[in-house]
Amino acid sequence: MSQPYNPYAAPQTGSAGAASPPPYGQPQPWEPGEVLSLAWARFQENWLVLVLAYFIYMLVTQIVGQGPVWLWTIVSPPEHPGPFAQLGVQGPSTLFATVVGAFLQVGFLRICLEVVRGGTPQIGALFAGGDRFLPLLGANILVGLVVGLGMLLLIVPGIIIALSLFPVQFYVVDAKMGPMEAMRASRAATKGHKGNLFGLSVAYVGIALLGLLACCVGIVAAVPLCYLASAIVYVRLSGLGTATADVRPRG
Image 1: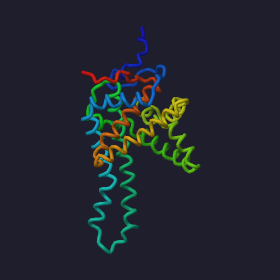
Image 2 (image 1 turned 180 degrees about the horizontal axis):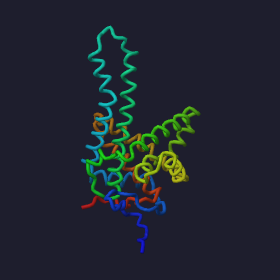
Image 3 (image 1 turned 120 degrees about the vertical axis):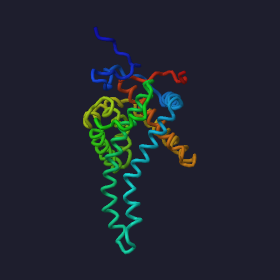
Image 4 (image 1 turned 90 degrees about the horizontal axis):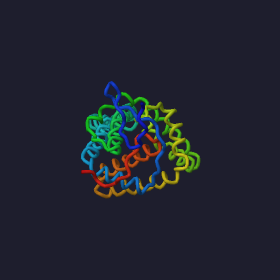
């Protein structure tokens, strides 16, 4: 006899020991303030793993993306046609950084989902994104193109499109959807929620500014906090193992 759907359950584990998303349930209600409060509580419980994981994610992508350019600037002869030749280094390194970033982003999203579902995150999960990084890379490119095109149409359409695609990355990583399927699922899930999503996005800007004001160091805490809030929104909208509403720290 099958077990009834539990919206507070963690992802189920299959026979091979790999986590798989729980069955779909009913979407759960959410409000920006409540989500941020829950995200803050979960962040306090797991801040070391979250900050360290994001710092590694950010550091590796920066080194991969900018390291070759810095090195070229240092070793190139003075008479070398700098700006033009630099493009030949910047292009490939940026492309490689995008690929590496997608790989690490899979792991970071999984860490955030583990946190909001009440699990114990492991820093090693950051380097275990090989199974979903290509679909995530494709989704990132598609979302960037679609939102960018919308921004060219007097900005407002771009904002609406961005809000409708808010949880795409989580659908790709957690629900194991392809890029197009994840975009369709995201548009369906966000119907009727764009006002709340816009309010949450504005709050993200404020959180990021506070992080930058803290000698820029605070950004390594501000960004994971926003990721946690986004993960909570995703599990609430999708009904895939939603985070509990108890914002009191456990233990």
